[in-house]
Structures are given as C-alpha cells and as structure tokens.
Image (cartoon, rainbow, N blue to C red; front, side, top):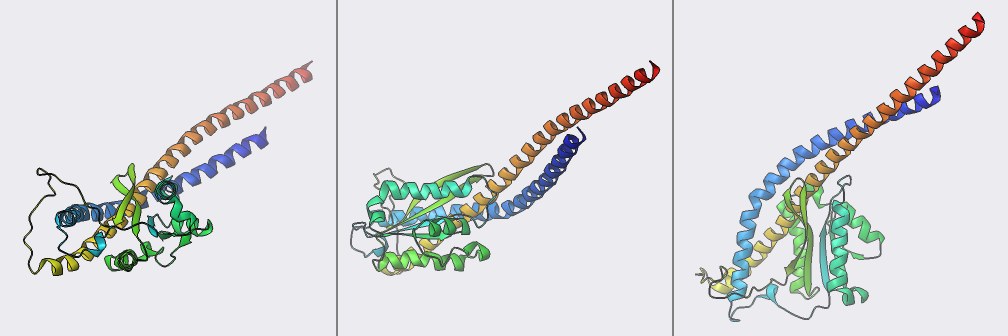
Length: 294
C-alpha cells in the first residue's frame, strides 16, 4: 500500500511540474500573439485593398497591355508555398496545413505531381522537415524565415515565385497558410498566388472601376504588380505567424486544464488509498490489542 501511495505522489508532482510549464508557455504565447495580431490586423486592410485594386486592373484590362504575372497558360509545372511554424506544441496547426497542401496536390495537381513537376517552397521548420523526409521536391532556402521575419526577407522568398512564373519555371503558384481570425480560430486557406486571378464582373460589381494612370499605364502596372504581390505574400506569412501563436496559446491552455482535471482525479485516488491504509493499520492495531488482551 505504501508503494502505491508513493507512486501516486510521484505522479502528482510530475503533473504539477508539467502544469507549471504549460502555464508559462501559455503566457509567453499570449505575449507573442499580441504583437503578431497587431501586425496582421494593421497590415490586412492595406493588403486587401491592394489585392482588390490589382484584380480590378487585371480584370478590366482590354488586352492592350502586357501583364506577364497574369498570363494564363497550360499548367505543367507548379510551385506550392506552405507556411507552417518552426516549433510544435500548437495542437493540429502544422498537421492541418500539411494536410491542406496534400489535398490541393491530390485534387488539382495530381498529374503534375506524378511527373515530378510539383515543387514545395516551405516556410517554417515543421513543413520543411515533413516534405523533405517524405520525398517531395523541396526548395530548402527559406524555411528559416521566421528566425528573422522582415518584409525584405519575405520579399526574397516571394521573388522565387514571381521570377519563376515570369521565366516559365512555374505555370501556377499556390500559397497554403492559416488565416488568423482569433486566438481560438484559424482558417486553413489555399490561395492562388499566380497567375493573378481575373474576376468576372458585371455593371454593379465593386471591381469595375476606371483608373486614371500617371505615368503611362504599362509603366505603372509593371512597377506596381510585383510590389502588390510581395505585400500579399507578406500578409500570408503574418497571418500564419499570428495563427501559430494563437493555436499554441489555446493548446497550452487546454493542456493546463487537462492537467488540473488529472490532478483532481489523482488526489481523490490518493486520499482513498491513504484512508484505506490508515483503516488497515487501525484494524491491525485493534486486532493485536485484542489478541494480547485475550
């Protein structure tokens, strides 16, 4: 009985230590989430407006301008950008992003994948490790991007997609990322990055607009398009960054709650075992005293 009590006490101490760790990790994630959330919430309206403007320009161009980044061609070679995290302990965050990427390949690019014409550009250690270890064609240059998350560094990764599409290395580019909603909610998104999607619009569509271009239309579009696409790429990275911290904070909060429930169950078991041990000892004492008296 004493051995059982010692084992339960050790388990209680172990769980209490783990609970302290999960509490600390939750607090750290909450602090990081606040900064990451501020960054994406400030960035998102600007990025969405630029995206709307870009789609407007592409959709309303009458073919009199050259838009190589919007060129539609037969899809033979594909680049898929998968934005995961560097660390785990964030629930199903990384596995859901990887599953989304595999689903997109299976549903849209299975033929290209079987021919070895699908490449993965992973951002984040978890995605890089998974795809590299499972035989995918991986570009292994930018997976450590979160170590120094700046617009200039993200722009370098985006240039792989932009330059590759323009020179014909890729015919389509998709981005897989997690769109940040709140700490408890992340939406896993597959978004066509290139070619720039044209939107069919009618007379009442918000996308229909008549822009005044200064300087010339061709010069301005050639200058604006890469900058807008770099901004879109950066927004996707910031979305996933905030989602990661939200997912980790939620996971650590749930782990802390589970530890508390387990502690409650173990303490009940410990008290019952201790009460049984005391009762046994008292019974032995009383029996011994009765034997001596008899």
